[in-house]
Length: 317
Length: 317
Image (cartoon, rainbow over all chains, first blue to last red; front, side):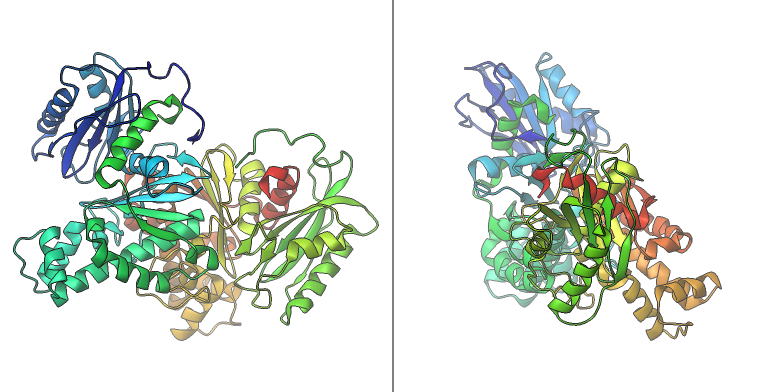
């Protein structure tokens, strides 16, 4: 574990030189330099392509190269969709099927002429970002969540990152809330992600007669705001599974706060009311009921800021 | 957090003097002196009585007094059924309804003429006992579970106790595995405990036509060993919810091992085969599948040995 409130060890990153923060998700790839004062430089993003492992890598390499531009970086941190193997430096993101055991850390290090690369779960990176700079400030035990194409999470416990031996702690999207539930691409059944993710909401709504402008979460949210009953029910169902997952995480980890970001959380007006109502059904014990559920303050930038913070701390890898 | 592999701070407990280890559960109350070499002295137990808060306290005070006998103790550690408030020193065990916010730590300290008393969740104590002396040796991340009248747990993460701010981390019995499940005495719905606990198994079997020698888990296990189909199905159902809860905990906490003790685990021959089978349905990701599930080696003594270890470490309280 890494005490985040300790100053970064001197010499971990040369003063005055930027590091590169990289975010790998099932929907998009992003990178930005992080200046020595913590400010993010210009962000470069592009959609995560379909295709084989090298197609996805080529897209990421282009994003990285453009983000560095004419500057120089002393090293990089990657927040990647999980699961990953922090020891081997490989990633197998559920929503990037072409990457299974892909050696992301070493490939990026080679692209950066051997400069050091730190690899963490993207939701761990997001949790660290919120803890330092956003909606997680001031607590000791928090779960930072991303509810989007997938559902991920990262834990800060006793004021430190808890990543686990393999770097995969915080995978709340693959906790089981419906013992009789549908199969999940992860191989299990009834995972939070099978109900709560954006694509799961859209699939359920379409099966139940919703016909929006497009089969997307944005269109589903628009329908819900127009009062469409099926679209509203899709948000309620998603929030209910999310509440069960959060109550479970709070029971297990004695959490102070849960910070939710990602595309689905951008519809906070639609998500928050049924989420609060469902917590009444799934949070029983007093220490579980006390958990605060708040929206991300940094949203898309949480992961990049968290990765930047972690690059300064070699203990984290 | 407390690094369990550090030696106990000198002066925390006078050398040569025993400490008292106390175990408070919904079924029984127990206490024993722990000699300076770590050996448990003579164990005193009695059933947890029904009745009001003072009736339960009187029974515990009698157990404690008998366990001390003519000896002397320098302090005590209590492992209590949860939930509890580690800051206030109060306990509200789900299965001891007469105790709600009961000031157990201060009452025991008063009985011991002001000697120091450490209060932890009983399953945390059990996890520490297994980690030091039993089936948890050699791992970095483990969940110690008790499957009995209730279902409890305690976490060791990165080789340290993780108890949480309120001392309640590890409450796997109140993680939600059945989003449409029955109400739980904790106030939530579909908790692992509503399906997996001994009383839940017996209730389900009786509702489904089982008629054993007595409405107890021991009789249910005997029927299952005789081939009774309903009794066998009760074990399968219990194991299935247990597997979902364990898979969730492994996804969230990147666990190496889960150690299971308690009355239901004593029927390991009946529990283990359906538990292993169900892990196939609920453990999808590779880092979740790697979790080892083993039976407690210390069983009833894990909590007392763990409490004894923790009494030597004031950081834990």
